[in-house]
Image (cartoon, rainbow, N blue to C red; front, side, top):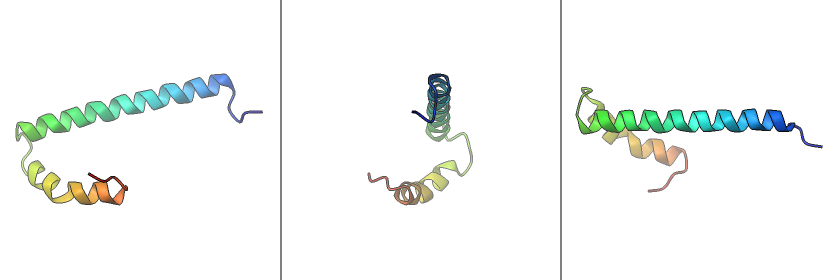
Length: 61
């Protein structure tokens, strides 16, 4: 017997899709801000911290 019934599973999948969409939109927003240099210091902050952020999450580039 599953711990989640089909309705719970569907709700969880819907929430996962919503969170994924939100992350994609946030990423697009930040890329736009970086490309247009519209937030003072954002490029420098990103350049200084992105590699450590990715490494700490086990992401290799």
